Length: 265
Image (cartoon, rainbow, N blue to C red):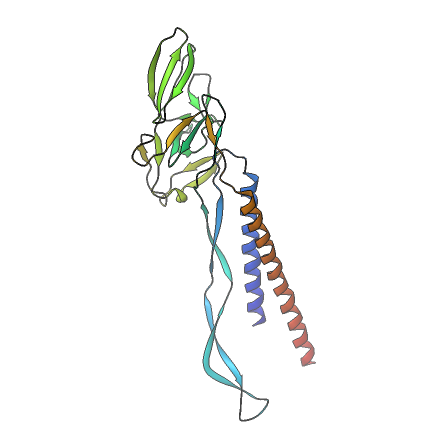
């Protein structure tokens, strides 16, 4: 019985430690462009039916087994972490290559090995070949390439890229498309603000911004992290208190075992 209480309390301490680690990662990324906070998910462990013993009414001081059983749980276990893809605030930057998605969707980028990744971080740069790339150097797909005579670029809400040249001419260079998933919470986080498709997320659906449920593109803006520092601090205090209470349970069980051992002597 005491062993069960110890393992139950230990599982609670581990669960709260994991919760604090996730919260601390959220707080650390509160200024990361396009960051989506994580939430830990837990479930209770299996229950055991334990016979309920009561004091016998016939002979004082003796016990008899009752036909009733009680269910006693065995603690908690972490099951998964979920990304909360809630819209972050849109912050103006006045940089023509900064793009924010207002609504659903991800930018599709191509990695050096030819595979695709997805991001909400629209802080694009121009590489040495004139192509739009992420801060990590990954090419935006479909690719947008500029020339050395390009004066500036205008990108509409539906992703149409119009280039203005030094000689006063302008033309449509191409279109930026977005990708969305049936279950964006199932995407795998790769770091560097990148996500990867999984079986849980479903296949990527390519589409035009500002149509068919896709978000619109805002040029000269960036999406900030969706971490709410007040919520995270409250969650951290709650996890800390729960950890302390579970550790108090371990201490209490230890004291009870010591008292029981003393009574046997």
